Image (cartoon, rainbow, N blue to C red; front, top):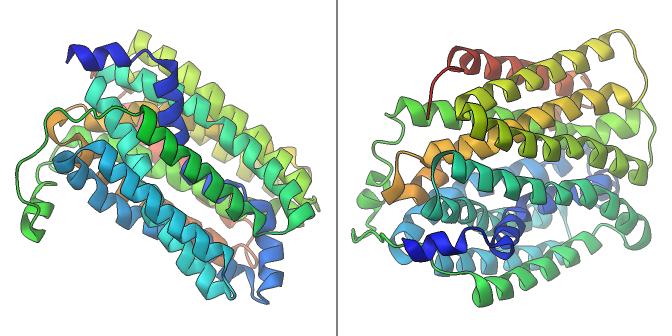
Length: 398
């Protein structure tokens, strides 16, 4: 245990883990400015193009079921490298896609592979720390991670204009290759309590026994799932909403997206400090307050007819600031009671997180061309639903 504590403060390890978790937002946010042009390139509609986002989340959810138990048995590092390899194969399929169907298949492979680094980066933190200390490290990772969705759409807008939509996938391939090399060279193995149980199909699913029966676990994964559902409604719908309602270019949309991500970065730092002073539950309560306020403001400004990009940017800044409070603390809290199967706890939390996001992302993508208010409506409903149990639990201690 001493050895693990000695590597916790290292900024290099924190940056590497944050970069691993950044694969998912990089893989979704960078090509958002290209969605309209991808539809034109494949002669299809936005509903089909949205499948490259929503089915990406399906693959992401399914993949997470497997990585945690295998990493609990065989170690974090080898399983993580397998995920990186699958991600790279999926990226190559996307680069060479001749139809929208092949692009969707490539995205599914990307997602299945990319889900491993996300699950295992959080699990590695739990191997080393617990409680508010784990939440603090996850918050720092979240702050570093925040630079990716802030920069990616801007960079993606310029790439789209200069080189077309396929250029994004070349960037994904280069980043995955560099991360794989960094994992091999610099990431230590942190699983000191490997399970000995044979991973038969029955034993595999038994690993998850006891997780959902914990009210603490259910509380935290619900906060994660509802927060991410609201975030992905914005990710799925904002490109169409902003570029059609306010007539912005891909580059302008990229800057708009980046501006609201600053809210998440602010929230991760503020939430970590608040959790260390007042506790995890209190920090989550304040975060869900911001989410509810942001959702109500977005719908209200839309209904009164405000036709300015700030009508979306300001409320979403507040919602994402709240997400910065909620996500790192909830991720740490969901693993706090299960040190010997932290990988499984992280995997199942990720399944709920991404599953809910896929539902609301798909709903947004399918309906937004005919019902543009669907995006603000989902965000406000999920924000309010997330706030209610957080309010009643605000005085609990972890």
